[in-house]
Image (cartoon, rainbow, N blue to C red; front, side):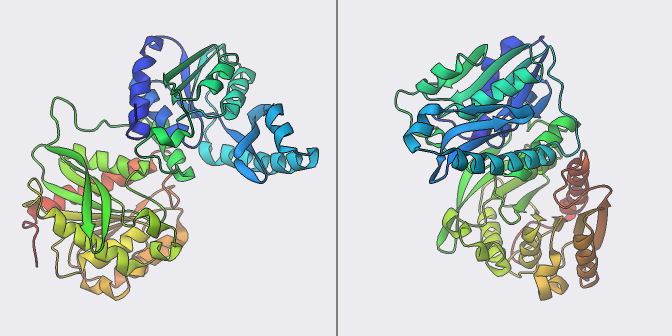
Length: 442
């Protein structure tokens, strides 16, 4: 059995954990990949979410092979068999552990973003990961949870190797695993979509959980007209996307992601959910293929990204449920520059543009050609980008507004700041797009 992505795995895992309702428990995601799974579990069961930070200790010449793991509060697990087979010396192990200890401490500060750790004393700790291969990291997590006072430890994963589960059943009070395949090679082989989870995505999910900002997608009682994975031809490549059109849509918003991001970004998916709740369709898609992302120059090729956005906009105009809808662009970081360049392109008609933490200055001469009402959202503590947005606003002759979100830095990871940015975007699109003429060539 395959999982579509980590979010779907989390929802299915939550069904198996439903018996815990009414008990005092906390869901702990293992960063990074376990956090999107844990987020869905915590949201479905309406319980607190936190991270339990551990680091795998990889063999120097084969870092994917773990000889152990470390965690908060000095937890340390060593796999003696791997150490012997890899013929590791104490010096080699010490160098790896020192490096990973530094990274562990950095992540603790980064992920919690100033929030206190959720207390575990006397409670049940439900540790969630996206899968288990060797079990070293999960073993360390179980030990950390006990050191932090958990009265009971439950390990919950979508898929795991049978050998690892055998070991982990001695570490946890209970192990819940949806799939235990006979032949197990890697966690990713059991997912259709298994992209790398970034630090930013982890922070965003934890921020959403802490703020309680978890609006559900369109409810089952009012299902969307379309909610599908799509493939879009743009030039000589095919791009992957996800198109959602709610009942009685007032417009549709295309997302132009920032550098290093994708249609799976929890940050952009959260904004999309807020827009969908307001009656707006959304199209989140990857501006670059996986092969193209390897070349970092492509991430900053604004002309290339804008051309892709234009191609996708023209494709959208041919789709049954979106053909007559006014179109808006939502851009973040470098994606904001691509959105503005595309909005200035005469081949498409764009009703409104929103930039969040964007670099509109990178749009260059295209700024003066933009006619769509444009909202620039910038964090109050993102000082350098704020000044760049102010300069860009002066170069634009359309309806332009600059909105500051107090206390926010570039990634809007502070509690409540992403929610504020999403609400600003929602209000901008809902007041500009409905009055816009149907999308089509200018």
